[in-house]
Image (cartoon, rainbow, N blue to C red; front, top):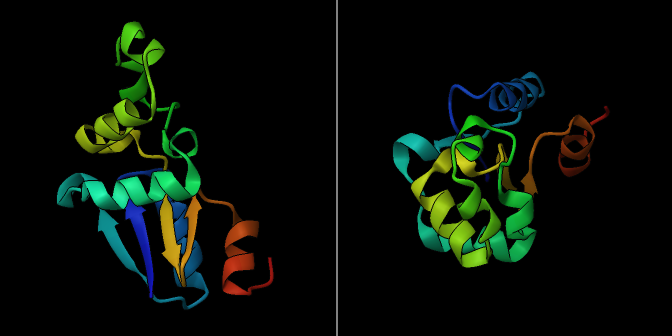
Length: 117
């Protein structure tokens, strides 16, 4: 089973979903903003990918955080922030056959799904 996690109005999510659909790959989309995200799943992602990889430092939510909060960031704080502000999770997060991919790359998706680029 393939699940893609993200926010429905995110351009990168749209690209990933178009890529999957164009290749006939069935998936479930999970909107972390609307549906929330279980802290245990978030901790599992952090354990596998690392909180630094999972944390979206490019968006407006990140820029809106205080400088003090950004300086004092550690794994536990990052998990709390991503739980409270799902837009801080880099998108998309894709789970497929026990694999976890953070972010969208056509080449990486092609590898995972055994597709030509």
